[in-house]
Length: 270
Image 1 (cartoon, helix red, strand yellow):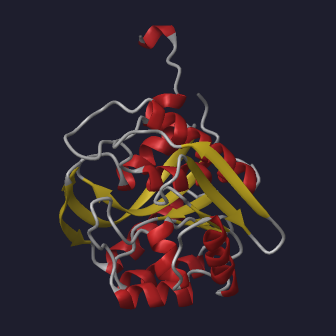
Image 2: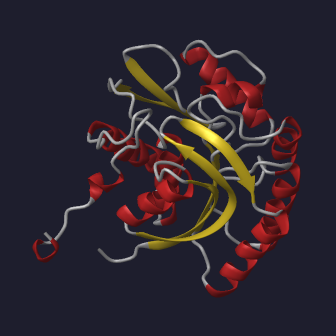
Image 3: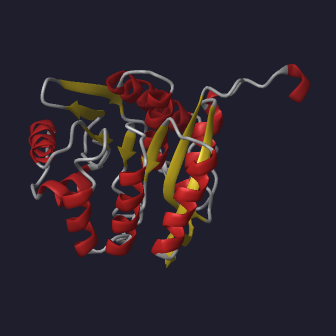
């Protein structure tokens, strides 16, 4: 597999390997994309939940970004966990100096087990400074509720929340519908010109750890290779669904998905 493009991932780590920057690197690699990273936090967790979060100093996050892009220019940027106002301000400062137009923001706020991963003040700063800069934001239902300040109980609510986010200056929104209780899962892509609903059968498994990180990085990877944003969302969702369907059943809690589902090894490596 040849390297198709290069992306910069700004995100926190997951010591269990299923989510965060570990999942991001696996996803990009399995889709043929080279990834650079700027680590924002170290989380101590396993499939049962998050034990603690150790933040990386904001200046060091900034230095990781700037020193890396001096050498290797990214075709796109994926932003994940930004845990504080200082970190968001520093990432925003770095983005102001970059010429990369393709930026995907996954507003990581709540862990799978329910632990909050970002402060209220940081959320306000994110809305004010980052939303207008990004090409796409990919919140799940709880995150969209926090950002748009609306209650989401159905598809129409998802569309309403997405339009509220567009009013804040976001160009494109993909709200992930996994938290709604239904046999069909709806992910909804919205911008000022169109609404696209991606509908899939819900897969009955508890092993969905890291799906949000994986989806946003898959979208970034496809987008970095020249696909349209809507097509990148479509392909990213298909990749994640296949990864869930083939999950390796690892861990006692919410286990990871199978990032390697897209790889067909050559005979010499089998």
